[in-house]
Amino acid sequence: MSAHPLDDPAPSAPPQGRPRKAAIAAWIGSALEYYDFFIYGSAAALVFPHVFFSPDDPATATLISLGTFGVAYAARPLGALVLGHYGDRLGRRKIMVFTLMLMGLSTFFVGCLPSYAQVGTAAPVLLVLMRVLQGLSAAGEQASANSMTLEHAPETRRGYYTSFTLNGTQAGQILATLAFIPVATLPEEQLYTWGWRIPFLLSAVVAVVGYVIRRKLEETPTFLKASADADVAKLPLAHLLRHHWADVLRVVAASLIATVSTIFTVWALAYATSDSVGLDKSAMLWVGALANAAALLAIPLWARLSDRIGRKPVFLTGAIGSAVMIFVYLWAISTGSYPLVFLAGIVFFGVVYSAANGSWPAFYGEMFSTRVRLSGMAIGTQIGFAVAGFAVSFAEQIAGPDGKNWLGVAGFTAAICLISAVAALTGRETHRVPTAELGVKPAEVATERVTSVPTPSA
Image (cartoon, rainbow, N blue to C red):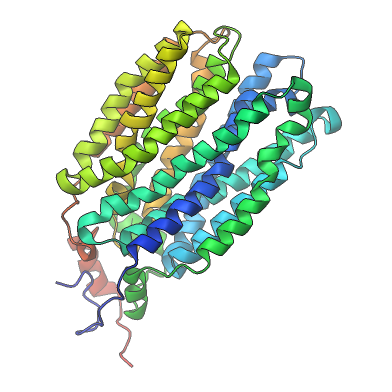
C-alpha cells in the first residue's frame, strides 16, 4: 500500500540507497561539527570566566560563563524551525553542508574575539552572539544527518546506520577534549591570553574539510522519490503540527536525556576542578576523552541491538541506567579518588548513556514520515536540548554558593532521565515497520485525499 495516496498509479522505484557512504559522511561531518560545539563547553568551564567576564566576582563569572554555554541551546529551536522547513522542502544534503560551514566559521571567530580586559562588556556580548550562531547550526546538523542515514539505510539496519551520527558526535567530543588537554597544561598567563584560542582557530580547517566531504553526498532515495511524485510538503511545519504534534511532544520529553551529556561534560568538569574538590584539569579532561572513546564502541553495538529487540528497550536501559549512574559518578568525584572517577565516568557516560544515544536517532526519526522527518526531529530534539543546555546553570544553582551539593545535582539529573524514560514508554515500537510506512497516520492520509491535488503525469 502506498504511503501517500497521491502517488502516480505506477510510481518509479526509488533510487538505490548508499547507506555506507551516507553513514561515513554523517560520522565525519558530525565529528568535525561537534568538535567545534564541544570545545566551547570545555572553555566555558575552564577558561572563559577568566577571559570574558569581570575578575571582581569569580563565582558569578563562572555562573554566567556556564550560562553562555546554554545560550546555544536556546537558539536551537529557532534554528530547527528554519532549517527543518528547508530540509524537508529542499533536501537533507543542502542543510548538512550549510550547517557545517556555519559552525566552522562561528567557532573560528570565537578564537578571534577580544577579552574583557580589552573591550569590557562588549566581549561577553560578542561571545554570546557567536554561541547563538553555533546553536543555529547545531539545530539542523543532527536532524539532517539522521534523516540522511535513516533514509539511505536498509530497513533491518536503520538503527545501526543512524547511530553513526551520534558516534561522530562522540568523536567530536574526543577531538575537542584532546585539543584542550595540552592547552590546559599551559601556565595561566599563556592559557588565558593566547593558548585557549588555538582549538577555536583550527575551525577554519574544519569548515574546509567539512565542505569537501559533504558537497558530493547524494540526496536520499526517499526524498528523491517524494520530489518526483510531487509529495514534498509546501509547509512542513503546518503538516507536522496537524498530524504529528503528539510525536513532537514525545521527542521533546525524550530528548531531555541530553541533560546527562551537558552535566557530565560541563558541570561535573567545573565541579571536579573547583577549589572544593581540586582534581587536576588535565586528568578530568582525560576522563571525558576515555568515556567518549568507550562510547565509540558502545553506540553502534547498542544501536545494532535495537535493530534486533526494538528501540524502546535499549533507550530505556540508557535512561534509567543514567539516572542511577549519575549518583555514582558525582559521588566518585566528591571522594577525590582518580581511579573511582575514571571507572565511574567510563561506565556511566561511555557505556550506559550510550544505550540512549545509540538508539534515539532511529527511534525519533521513525516517528515521522518523509515529508516532515527533518522538521519533526529538529524541532522536537532542539526544544529538549535547549532545556538540557540550561541544565548546567540550574545545576550550578542547585549546588549552592559553595558548589558542594552534588547530591542535589544528581537528583535533578536523575529526575530528568526518568521523564525521558516515561516519554519513550508512550511511543510506538517501530524497528520492524517498513521505511515507506514510517510515520504515516490514517488521519494524515485522509486529509491528503481531500486537500491535495495530484500533479499530472508528464
